[in-house]
Amino acid sequence: MSETALPVRLDRKSELPLAVQLADALRDAAATGHLRGGDRLPSTRALAERLGVSRTVTSAAYEQLHAEGWIAGRHGSGTYVTTSPPGSRSVSGAVPGEVRDRTDLLDLTPGVPWADGLDRAAWRRAWRAAGDPAPAYREHRAGLPDYRAAVTEHLLRHRGLATHAVLSTGGTTAAVFELAGAVLSRDDVVAIEEPGYQRAVQTFRRAGLRVVGVPVDGEGLRPDAIPQGVRAVYCSPAHQYPMGSRMSASRRVELVDRARTDGILLIEDDYDGELRFDVAPLPLLAALAPDVVAHLGTTSKILTPTLGAGWMVAPPPVAAAVLEYRERTGTRPSPAGQRVLVELARNGDLGRHLRKLRRELSERRTMLSAALTAAGIPLLGDDAGAHLVVPFDSAETERARLADAERAGIRLDGLARHFAGTPTVHGVAIGYAGCSREGLASALPTLVGLLGKRPVG
Image (cartoon, rainbow, N blue to C red; front, side, top):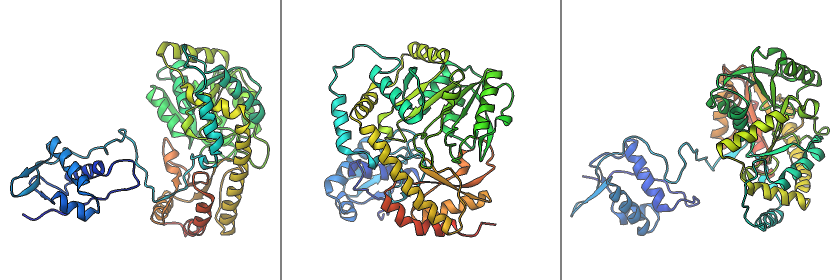
């Protein structure tokens, strides 16, 4: 019996050992039908020569599969597949559900911060200093006092919010989960922007809440479209995600009036409110109506998701309910990222980084928008944040342009996935923070050519 051709690719840049990669590839080949029970495998020496690796790698992979029972050796005949695994399996070492990104694509999706812009010396200094305090002997359910003080100063300086009621969180999604469990009840109705942040949608739903979409336009969420009977409204008024608009002053007043009249909690996601380039950062809903607004902020977009640190400013009854929820469930945000932020703020590194970040993203946005505008390509979104939107006339065009971009080595984000219901607008969101400036500049001709193509249909 002849040996079976093996669809094996090894990534020498991966953190996974080559032997583990090889064993995984052989299992997957069996699971997908490329290998079947009774198929003969190459010898360890022949396979090592074919893949350009040492025989130690192929021997280790075969030994692992032999121990698991998927292959067996026949004296004088070779090594054979004994049976096929029941269906595909996760890559060894990967968390179930984890997506392994293609590293060969230029990532121009939104939501990725400019982590390369962090001063590495300041970063290392902050982590070293964060390890100086003695290990804590008691939990701080509300967050480390120094962290809450640093965020209080940050909100006053960069968001114009004067408060002393800061709670630490593990980030925006973690805060939404806590609000859902502490303040809302199963079957309560939550209104959320459509299109909007789908992690929030899924978090509410998993908590047993009902989610209804509220349309947005050039002035942000439409308060007149909020149905009766909702308990909470989740929105991003400073920079609507993903469409990029700001909520107008009149709509803010209308939304607050509605919340006070109907007893609605407004959940304000200020995910990148510090990043405004045309005017000063817009005032927060929490500054306008601290009695009905739970304000959420995060370090993920201005620094890095590595810290896993965010904050909440909420009315006293809401804050008390969140603290009681943490006490009841034995949960609280990790203090490690909080300590790092404290050190970055203490040394002035946080402020310096924000100034540098605004300059860099403003210049990148100008470069991208100028290229698109010069080609007659329409775009949406305020002069803020780290992404803009190119609208299309149909879902077919959106799908085609996403596919075209991937074939050209560029990853974009379609608007369709930001809808909890049926998409009503189409287009792509282009992020410009996660790549290098050089990568963005080199991709512009290709990007303009793709997005300027005639609509499909």
